Length: 293
Image (cartoon, rainbow, N blue to C red; front, side, top):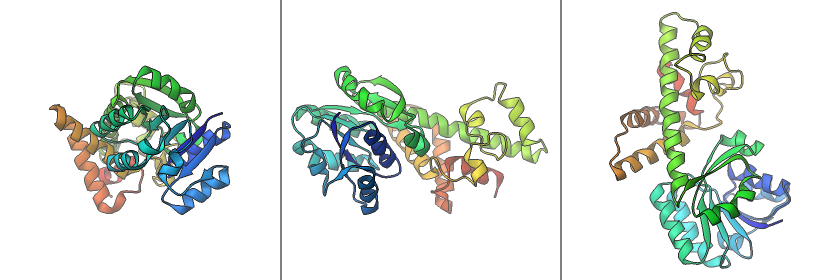
């Protein structure tokens, strides 16, 4: 089994790291938050005092960090110099495509193999090892990364060259954000019209209104018992994280001159929702704003 450096042990990185430990891999783990380090140590990881220490003497390094600026800093200031030549680098953060490509180019220049491998599936998917990984990078690097990713996820897709994983993630989540707003609007209108929410669900889930936001993550309590709406919108994927992804999509669209008016509208609505104090609420909780709560 491989020895892996794991940097970033938060809500997603923590359970991902634990799944690698369960699979028999050895981990050198680092995070700025002491409680996250303590949890990793309790799960069997060796904890270290810096990102550079996590990257030294390992076969692969996995990072799960908040934003592009953190990824760029950790790789440029720590990982690229500390890792042995030929080390496999996997960044599972959700960041902008430009940064993903720049860091990958720097990694290649330093003699490493790298993939960007953002995830979909939320905290529940991280804990259950059922995440979807959207992977960008050379085919050889992808094949090296696949066995590790399979210990943390269920669906592993090679999306293309460097940055393609990030492109796939932000396009997918833009679609998700737009569709969630549409489903919320539909249920809010139905309520005003006196139409029972279960009746609307029974009809739309089997007809042209059907989508994942409707059938798997319904934003009103009742029709889908496992959805966060039945737990007062306790987050599986927060509104703040959805807004981050929608903003990344808008930045990318601006860069390439793509028209994404529905994505822009969704970003504006989630900005209002987050700024109203709901950043930690599940993203489906925007139903409250649509309802006028």
